[in-house]
Image 1 (cartoon, one colour):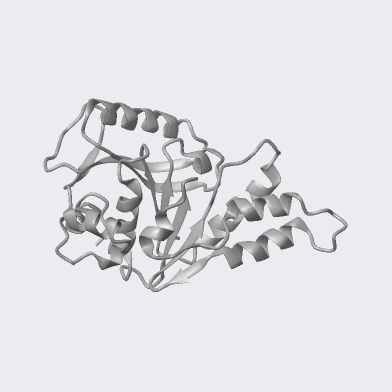
Image 2 (cartoon, helix red, strand yellow):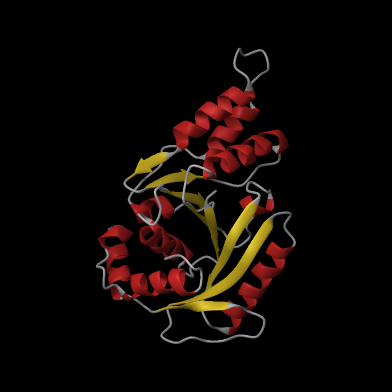
Length: 243
């Protein structure tokens, strides 16, 4: 069974970069590959990792929902086959992109298929890293049954602390198992404690990360002495117990 780490945070806090840094750090930590799940409607994780998916789960979900019963191919067959085709393979990790949230139609049956597929899929990986939007749309629809670590990325401001607390309150109301919840302060040079928040650590402002983004490079182009990369590696080891 994979260790699942869900990353959340308000847009613009750098959560996708944090997710990508974690993926880089976790590659090679187990005998299996890492599964990267882009569960943010504004899908950017693939670009950060150097992969551009051709299709998303949302596209497949709509296709399966529109499949007629007499078409000769069942929704289950369409969905199961299509899901395997959606996984983009790379060196040390695979990528699955969720796409936009649901529309006005009823997706219950298809989401049941998706949940079962993701649960079965996670058994094939050592780690699953899911990059979520702040509203946790995909998790709130219970497209996964358990999360080992929920990591909220925020800046250590009053607004950042308030946003983190609201995400925690939302996640505690979801019908899924979340074992541990913590906050990573991003783009700061100091550890700021906050009442009611389990602070995992901080990631400093890193010019190499900014330069990579401007030049269209990936997270794998960062040097080993990147301050952000070092900080994430230490958080994974000291706070999440991943050596």
